[in-house]
Structure formats: C-alpha cells, structure tokens
Length: 64
Image 1 (cartoon, helix red, strand yellow):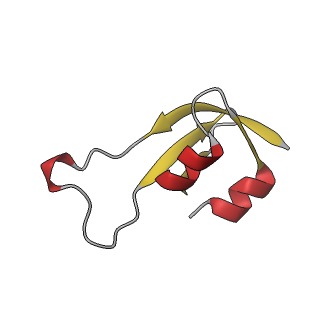
Image 2: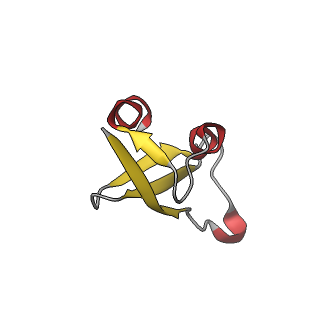
Image 3: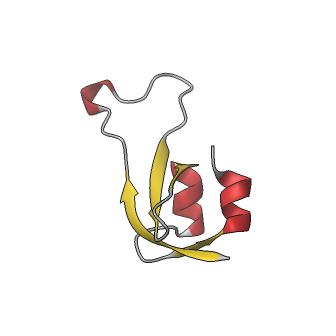
C-alpha cells in the first residue's frame, strides 16, 4: 500500500550539531497519521519529501 507524505520533520540540533557517529534522522508524517523515522540520507536519496509517496514495504525496510 502507498502512503502520501504530508509533512517532514527535521531535528534542530542547534549549534551543537550531531554527536559523533549519530545518524541524522527525519520524521515522515503520513496521510494515515503515522510518524515514521527514516535516516535523512535515505529520505534524500529516495526523494521522499512532502507530497511524495512511500510504500509499506519501504517503511518496513528503512524505518528505525
């Protein structure tokens, strides 16, 4: 099943940035109300942004 991404939330780590070894994550808000955390680089490479679609298969594969 495909789900539309209605919002994308990126963390604001301020001037501290990310800790060494910490993987930047984004939260995808889906049209069914779910929030799914995905590695930022994966979302970028897959083109997952507001208005894009993501499948249940990809959610199961990439969500953390």
